[in-house]
Amino acid sequence: MAVAKRRPACYGQRMSDPLSPKASGTRSGAWRWFGRGAGAAFSIPGLILASAFVGFAGLAKEAGLTVVQTVFMVGVVWALPAKVVLVGAILSHASLPAAAFAVSLSSVRLMPMVVAIVPEMRTPKTRKWVLYALSHFVAVTSWVLALDRFRHVPRDMRTAFYAGLGGTLVLANMAVVTIVYIAAGRLPPAASAALLLLTPMYFLTSLWGSARERASHVAMVLGLALGPVFHLLVPEIDLLAAGVVGGVAAYAWHVIAARRRRT
Amino acid sequence: MSFDAFDAWWWPYLFILAAGWLATDLWRFLGVMLGGRISEESDALVLIRSIATALVAAVIAKLIVFPGGALAATPLALRLAAAGIGFVAYLLARKRVIVGILVAEAVLLVGMLQFY
Image (cartoon, each protein chain N blue to C red):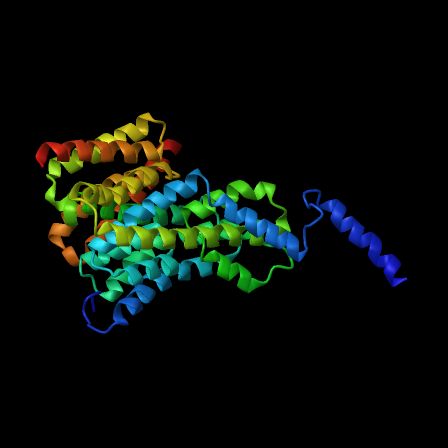
């Protein structure tokens, strides 16, 4: 009786999820999707990210970090804007609390990104620690790639897919940073200068393109103008001051512009 | 309490863990906890994104205006021209990041050849 009862239920489950291929739910299926996730790291967005990490390696070396410290930072922080802010704080000789506060402010936006991606990966069987571990991989590139590819990944294989994608991106860029850091000492001055221009150019363009609303463009222009000014006025908290003043002013502009549209 | 405040080998790693790892993963973990209970469109998130954007923009401007290493030896006008022309090229190329980077690097290198 029990067997007869279970069978149709099992059948029904499979029918209700037409996306699930046969291998779905098995261990070998999980490894296959892990591999496909790893493969998705080798794409145009992945390549552009790697070029940004080439620049970051030069920046960290210039700031006086050792190669081990730099690679350690890539692994534990991962999000590139947070790392660039952290290196910026180190360069300004900011204190630990001031540096932590500046990095926190630059990373709050990771929270809504995680909030958006978790429901896409979660099934009733997903263990909580898996989601916490995978959330570490959330940064702009892996997040955009994952949300784009998830449509073609069966729901119960999405954690495996994201583990492959995120893990590969982190490890590959740790390797890129190691190689570039070591090679950077032997570059001629022109190449070395070009390397140091990579990070600001990458963010100048990608930050503008990723803005969701006009307020972000206003914030960006204000931040660009206030950064050097506050560096001269309050060098130890220049990033914090520019971020808060520029950000709040841009938000005020957003509220006023929205009100004007309504009336 | 800055990054180079102590000579101990472990201090830079503690600094990176506290100011880097904790300050980023705390937000990621909070995101897992909240699940799908916060909207991307809410006004509070506009404020959060604006502050984060202004903060990173401030770092960008500092890296161009007050750079280190070999880039510091180039004239400020050349760096501003490279960044500005690269950005315009990025906009003209329908916001392709790679175009902006390559054009800015080309302007910088051509400019440096004139000075060295």
